[in-house]
Image (tube, rainbow, N blue to C red; front, side):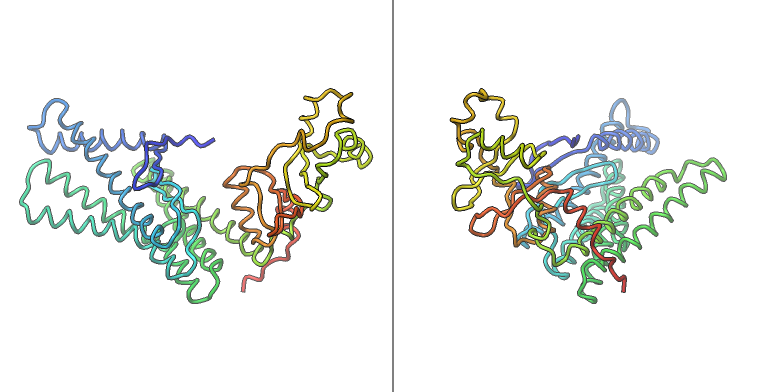
Length: 374
């Protein structure tokens, strides 16, 4: 279950906060408030803590601006932004799909770091030209430094960072193969992950020093997500060229709406079917509904011979129907986004082709020949 908390919308984009965000908010508020109190002894009472909270919120405001940079460029390309989420390691803009060309993917990827570096420039200019002093000057300086770090760190050329997506787009442009770009950027991302883990682990093991523990956490994050990107790219490559029709289950559970329930039960008994749900068609073979086996419990068995399937069937949710000539990758995305295990497959005229099961797609992947890495 998704534990993220929805806090509203920004420019029509759903905005979420991970519970882990509150941990970082508290740590930044406390640590920076403590730093301000030491730097400016005139601050008394709750003032340092309140200024620390303001700084923490502005920090996450910078992260949010970074993600909005990605989002606005994606929207301009006609890509829907499904959500923006702030979490312990920063932010994430979830896009409906990837860009269609390497150039478009490049501009989406670089937009976030560009916003961060622009904010760094603006804040630095404010600091040097307005002659602000005291805590306000300190907060402005730290926000400028944070945006500089955010922009430069995300330009590291490894997934899942923006630099990895930039590298992916460049390799895609050069080779014409988007999956090769993901593979290379994932390898680089995993390499940086191991470096970060080593830089956090070695001081801890050798000297008992916890100063670089954050590197260990970031390294683990990079390693895990870069690996997932590589794995998903391999799945995409294996399924390239395959359509939904290639994975339809043979002898899918299909029945006619004109059957009586008695005929349906007898037919199921004779075939030894173990299906718990059946797709229902009319005389033309068009999908008109579905019948769950449990629904028969609502009708007395002595009425089965006088009750037709179409009297008991339920409508099929349109979001669980897919056209047979669509790419199989689209079916996987639909299965995941709708959180279902099956899709009803029809042709473009609405004639039922059969049932697509997530398990069948997995089996098809196992049967695919190995990809030549060259």
